[in-house]
Length: 241
Image 1: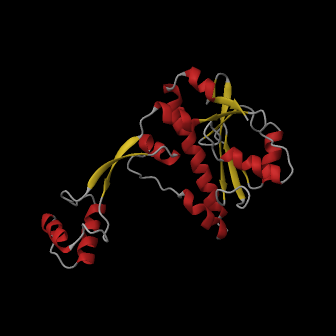
Image 2 (image 1 turned 60 degrees about the vertical axis):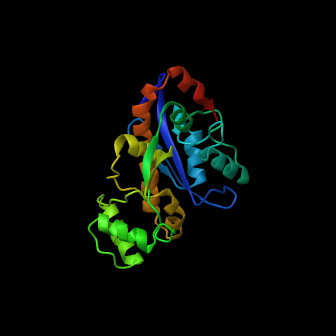
Image 3 (image 1 turned 30 degrees about the horizontal axis):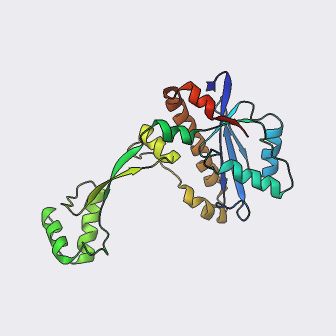
């Protein structure tokens, strides 16, 4: 995929947390035009790749670095500064897709919010009503709620007026990808919040798979949505790192 004659290189990093001071860099993945996944598991390897022209094109990230902050490049910039190394991405072209998604697409969805088992709403009287409406026999609060929850997971529970439908806007990469490509969440995802635990367990394979999935999703979202965004605004959002 290209923009204005430049190859787009999709890039993401995984870390052990949000602090560049305390948490480790784990892996980075770059996905180039030939669909080759290029992995680096050390800052030194990534440094050499960037310095030797590995990012010859426009680097595309999702919340990598935008006018309101970002994560990937501030994290990397800090890590290299702590190592007394220069920033190997300096001067390279970069496009953060997140601000454009926020500006040009309405990702608001509606979710059902059901009362928790411990809420005052889920008392014996109300649970008895819910059990009757769903063809169940009231037993006790815990068992009846669990049976209703099991029906809910099957999409067969009538919560009467005890559940609320609330709007929810989620601009995370996975949410945007699922909205357009996997609305029923049929694909298997390794959640980002699991990365620190996977790192402690030494499960690098799962972490690399998660990072590869992120850049794959990023490429699919970019290919589908960038043609719908005015070219002048894409150009305006391309910066030099």
